[in-house]
Image (cartoon, rainbow over the protein chains, first blue to last red):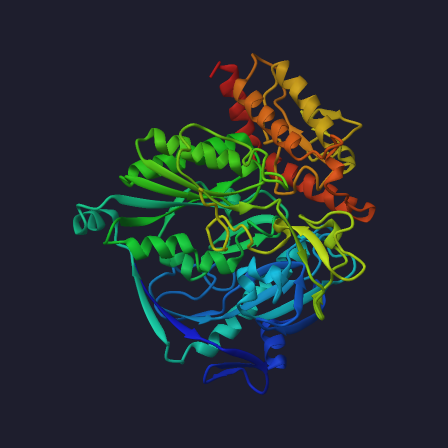
Length: 428
Length: 140
């Protein structure tokens, strides 16, 4: 499976007539965008705002972040099973609109979270302060249940990203990068001397506000399976996860997964990257046992020498992470786990809810309990009415002068467990 | 068996065959009741930290246990002790989870709903649980 990913680097986003790219500027026709995303019977007051890097703007509560992309050649269309048919994607050519993100925001449930500051100290912690953000806020009609609201907002964001992606379909990319993954047998023949490495991609799949979709399927109903990494670049994995802003994977991060990017970078040089094994993080212990058994079985089946496992979310997925690590290691496969920590505000407490001596290679992406003071921002998209009660917030978080004291876990992407953020740990 | 302090679970039990153990208390109290049951030989079917809502961010917890007791199930006890250890690490100097954060009265229905929905997701895996129980009875 081979995908050419054409990147078009955008330097500014403005509202104007007819949605198109003019040089390096994305012009968005407000009416066209609203028509494209369509009304939803569950939503009203759909609003579109722009937020640019460096501005004194705060966006909260953030639900999802999505990169605009479009299929130019090859099978299927972007977000298969969600917006388009279930053709297998990941081959041909896709264009990505870089430096632009669709951000969905608005209250789904009362305690929701997710802060993106476009400037100030908070901006240093979120990767989405560096993108020009097209922010869609939508309020539910009275009486709408959170399930319906979440699904409606999720679809709205995907439609907006697919619509904006169309604007770069016929634009010559600034950069084209080719990603190719062969079937294991051919891959082994091509690089017989290199260690065979796979990526175990754990997806949050528990219930309301904690779900992920693969080709439109609720991933809690899947058993672990194998994917070509390029399928994921075409939007085959979509986030429906609203909880734990700092370490959930927004759709943008699925599409731009840095572990996949780095494994491709080393492919053919130091390793032979064979593919992605997706697995879930369900609520029942039997599911955790089954999924980790299957994950280890597939790693063995693929003849891996090494595996990298990334986690999504807090608490019980630590159990999935450790089960995966232990069982893969027991197959004789060297395993590295990638996670973040809830080690208390002083960082002195136990970091994970589970542990095992076999987890002897661990990468952290920061301590989500660390606190930060976010300054007042001139413009607010969404509402700070929930700051006190969002994850990472606490009573008195929102101060009278408009500043906010929160834990890093309130900031979207701050301790992302694929390493998409900026934090890690160093030994002294 | 469902151990819960969530009124929505109590009032709308998704499966009539489930036995309800009502806990008038907090998140940690639920886990302590669960621990007692595990010591009696009941097996944990759902993870005590289900969901990404942190223990100090919600007052509600619902845990599903096997219908019958058997020999002490060490993996269940291990998972539970780990959860209680983590919970302890979140406590403030006053020994209370509340020192970290207070949720608002008006959000309690939403917090109940999310906890309830996690339980429903687990109930939908019912055959899985029967299988787990079966394994246990065969002494695995």
